[in-house]
Length: 95
Image (cartoon, rainbow, N blue to C red; front, side, top):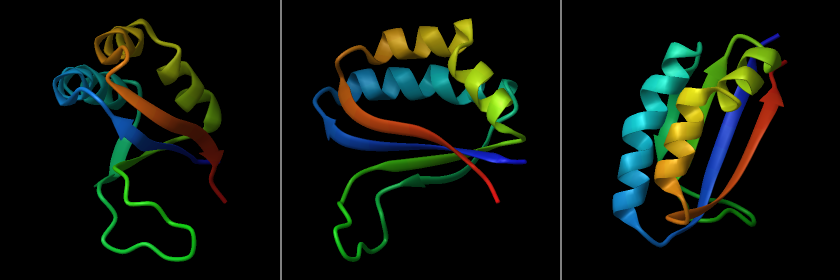
């Protein structure tokens, strides 16, 4: 069953660190089996929706998404991000 990795950026305090993270994270996650399906600010929000950068990555399954998160290549990306942003990140099984 597929899985979705969803990251919402609650606060970006250092855009340069976010850019350094993105430069490392995208190739690491794609190499680990992820496909970016959405990235950016919402076109429109409803109900309690927040205007925050959101990224959605499709993985073949939950196990692959977890392995991508725990990989050395992604750890390097997280190190580059450091305290540059506060994010809400989750891995959600597909239907």
